[in-house]
Length: 316
Ligand SMILES: Cc1cc2nc3c(=O)[nH]c(=O)nc-3n(C[C@H](O)[C@H](O)[C@H](O)COP(=O)(O)O)c2cc1C
Image 1 (spheres, protein in one colour):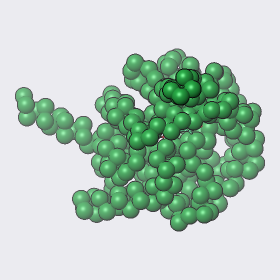
Image 2 (spheres, helix red, strand yellow):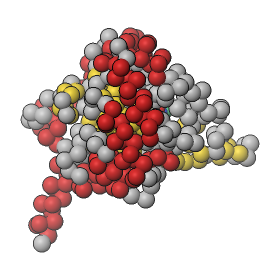
Image 3 (cartoon, helix red, strand yellow):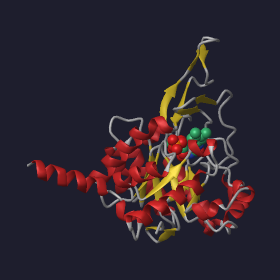
């Protein structure tokens, strides 16, 4: 009932983790998380290792989420292909490799490295991170420009043997031009949204908490922003699958995202608070589907739009 088909990939569940917010070693230590997750999205990987930004890089915002300015700390693509991908492969979940590059050609080069590596076949899909607010080059600076979004997506799609998802930023007046650019570039799906730029001040020390002053805001407070983005993308590009991200903490949240237009969802910040959130939401979605007599949960995708149309026609 919960499986989702996207291109040629069948995800056993619509629940994925959000990049940078999940430690796959949890598969070893807790109840079978891989049964409730349709796939794992890796931490964003760059071609060379990155140490990330200087401390302080995270701030908790009680009740509403957190700020981070990690800055894409990662051990580099070669380490991922030699080590991490094999660790993930043993759990039988789909593997979505999140990639970031500092140039358009860099995306193509990284995908060629993946394709030509003996372990590259374990990667089921690629998510290009065009939206990190915490790096000087290759993040939001790419993601706010429709031309660069299209070019980065095209470079990735042309080199890739598997579907490419474009992860977009909400830090822009309207997400639609960049969503359209990603679709024109050949993206198989849109992942939305990455974090919202924010700041927090330590009043005791009279300075920002984050060394980089601002960072990416995530968690329950950004849910309405994410839902708005997903609603808009689905309304304008109803044929394009959407992977909804932003502030999800319950099955009801997942249902909202699906009704707004998402086919799959990713859960980030709330999984820090409760790593078992995937199992709980999975159970609750099954119970909901049974009580509603649904055959496929994805029948709900975008259904709130048609309700709106019905309401409008009643008014006329
Ligand atoms: C600590 C932290 C690290 C993150 N690292 C990445 C990353 O490497 N790549 C990426 O695309 N998004 C990254 N994100 C953004 C999340 O994947 C997600 O888009 C965002 O947090 C919104 O979802 P949430 O409200 O469920 O956390 C990170 C978020 C957090 C909190």
